[in-house]
Amino acid sequence: MIHLKASEICTRLQALGGRKKAKVLQRFFKTGKGEYAEGDVFVGLRVPEIRQLARKYQRIPFAEVIRLLRSPLHEARLLALLILIGLYRKGDATLLQQIYNVYLQNTRFINNWDLVDASAEHIVGPYLKDRSRAPLHRLARSDLLWDRRISIMATFHYIKCGEFAETLRIAERLIRDPEDLIHKAVGWMLREIGKRDRMIEEAFLKRHYNKMPRTMLRYAIEKFPEELRQRYLQAEI
Image (cartoon, rainbow, N blue to C red; front, side, top):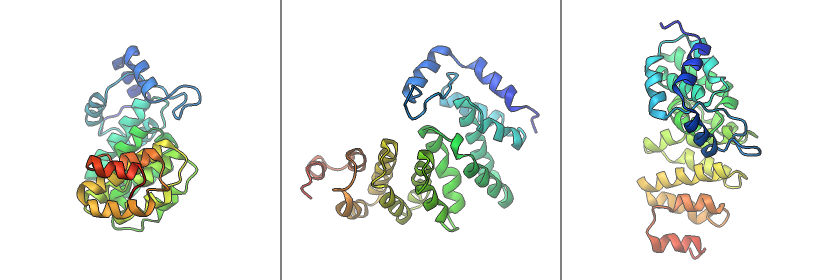
């Protein structure tokens, strides 16, 4: 075990980061006033660098991983999630449950699309694979944007296993969601289903495309042949 405190790791992250890159990331991830990540703090590290650090710090105490997950630094939260994913892949049943519980107890800190997308399919999806999926539907009903994104992104694990029903159930629940980040995630997952079985995706679209937000529909049909894509966009199906 590496006896490092989360505060020490955060200091190292700040030393490795760059102010110029941090400013770019803060614009890209919408941290301005009134934006979805208002006030989030970046130190300016790239994802490959954070992945290297996750391997380096894989053996820090579990309590310090949780402290990293609750850090005000975006890169520290991503680092914590990558460490948790590494632990999950090697853990026994007790550790898997612990990681899953910690994840769901701290979703308010998994508070940007990159954090959700990097982690939900690797922790929440696998944990619920052979269990009740009711927690996904509770997340989908949550007032917290990030919970709802977790609910649909966790199902990417099932899509990769050739199972589409859960994604379609969550997608149907989220069709009228007000948030653009949910529209993109749902459309993306529908597109992933279509890459594996377009008939299943189209069966869903034919029932719902007239109710879907435009962004969701565009994401869902992005890989369709152009003529078919235009028919959906012009409501000619």
